Length: 275
Image 1 (cartoon, one colour):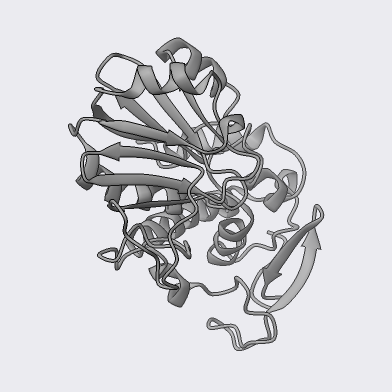
Image 2 (image 1 turned 180 degrees about the vertical axis):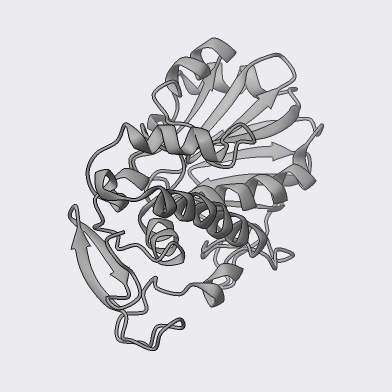
């Protein structure tokens, strides 16, 4: 499932392409992804412009010029493509998009969406739907002191906390492992047993991993279009994800795989500690 860095990458690339462009048409092949009738959804979107794109957790929020919001949740394996009408993928077959939003000769295709949705909402409805999400760690207001306070109230294992969207928004299975490695903490470390120094290290490690992942385009496997050379660039920079059996870049020990909270987890048993 796409996480914060992948959505930030899509946000950046799409913002360069569709901001202030008028929506000329929509095509919907799977009505179940919408929160209203296709005819209503189409009528509401046609003629509108996207003023800006916001990421909230693992969702993208398209702010329209009529005050409404288009909330996109890509679910487990959803992908986005934005290219010229009729463009084909590398295999030579047309994209089987579930939803297409047309901007003249350009089209935004949404495909592979499972357990996700594309909802048209008022600003109030969007706020209500996202109200259960935890804070954004990249928010400038998330200082070290606020981070300490946040974690001081939490119990349980580190990884379980990092991936809990009502506690912290945007982090998933993969980046939780990278953050734990950067902080030299085991994913199974107990939050209530972390020292003040460990929490501070975790804070800076979280920012480092997320900023680096965004800079290199995250771990996404599907580029936005043929001009997209950013998406997926972080794959060559990961240090534990899917590296079971390989040497740890920090200490030379062998990266291992286990489960934490029923989630596949990668870590170094030597240089990652409980505190």
